[in-house]
Length: 275
Ligand SMILES: [Zn+2]
Ligand SMILES: [Zn+2]
Image (cartoon, helix red, strand yellow):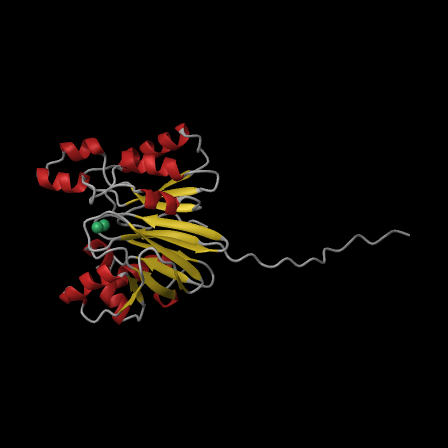
């Protein structure tokens, strides 16, 4: 008599759905990123009009009524241009720290936007996501980057920073996916037809990160855990996608992290979707 082949009776618990990400828009004309799984979807920044946000969400199978909240990194227009309509017309809750909320309250065009306050450096939850806001150096009231995590996954999003501080490095370490600013090529910025004072502001400690500095930061936080990096907030005048990509790719390869994918982001279209 043959023994019946053992049945696979063990039912393993469904792993918590991993996080997915798409950069809907990136650059000085508007920034917006969505992080989502089957249960929850949140946006980081709202730099597109509500109509354009809806159009790009649709391309990744999402809609505005799925968005549980908008996390605001800082009050610059390229990060909040769509905020009022998304909040007031579509009822999406907004989250910001005290400094950013104050700056928004002073802006008449944003009157009536009701903000849920968080404290920089302290984690909070939106839907099923844990959010860790951390301080970044930039010429705004109280700018932050974010780590968004579930027990299954950890994603870091940080743009608009003059220098990569120790805090930024420690928060991005152990992320599976990161979105990092690669704003300008240092040579192109110096050659650009721009006032000297503006160039100094961009290059300063409260300005924006160059390709070279981004490559250094990404190389420092990379490891077996890191699967993909998105390069974000590229300057239209002072950068080119192939320069940013080559700088970061070369640096990652040199440091032994050839497995890390380098993905681009765009002002006028969505990025590849992670997850
Ligand atoms: Zn900014
Ligand atoms: Zn910006």
